[in-house]
Image 1 (cartoon, rainbow, N blue to C red):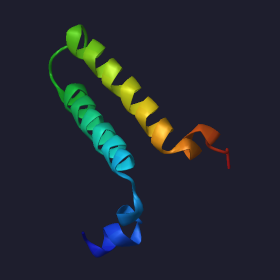
Image 2 (image 1 turned 30 degrees about the vertical axis):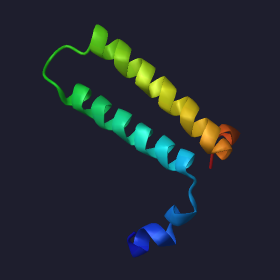
Image 3 (image 1 turned 90 degrees about the vertical axis):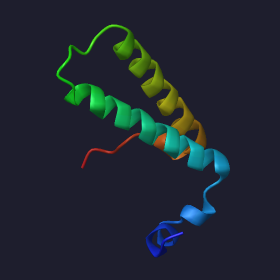
Image 4 (image 1 turned 30 degrees about the horizontal axis):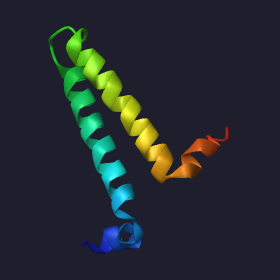
Amino acid sequence: MSDLAKELGAGSLTEDQTEAIRHAWLDLCESWEQFESEEQFSGVVADELAVACFDSIKELEQEFPFLLEGVKDE
């Protein structure tokens, strides 16, 4: 593990938290690829991406409950 990962507390994450982050990252990577694609963004791909994003949201909320507190306007 890198020094930066240790500093950020990566060693203290549970396996479920690590998986939640990994799944969200993969979903975001796939989303980015679709948005950058020259093809029309619709149909089955859009439906699958919507499900993946929703699943990532729920997984992250479960593993990191502080996300549900919302973001305060500054």
